[in-house]
Image (cartoon, rainbow, N blue to C red; front, side, top):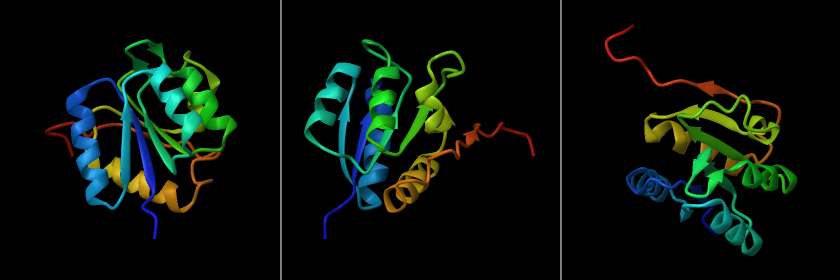
Length: 135
């Protein structure tokens, strides 16, 4: 049986390492790219089951990647500390998780989206990190 493929589009290496390890432990095959150009090149070759997408990358705002994901009906998580409000409509098709968040949140979302590809459609969830010391 084929492992589901997760593509991480993120330019911060330590974040990639953490997410990649958690996804692999959960049974995913994982690829990662640090830029919009490289992500679009990978997307031309493969159809990932889910994408973890940062908004701001080495070569700019990743709205073109989000637009391609929407056009190809690939579910995605927008994992960013950047507000997406004025960054493009395509981001709103993903599920937003604000950095920093526990990797288990990303793994749970990725697993759900990989099993149910339309899970992200019209169901954006805005998750904010827990405040330390609050209840």
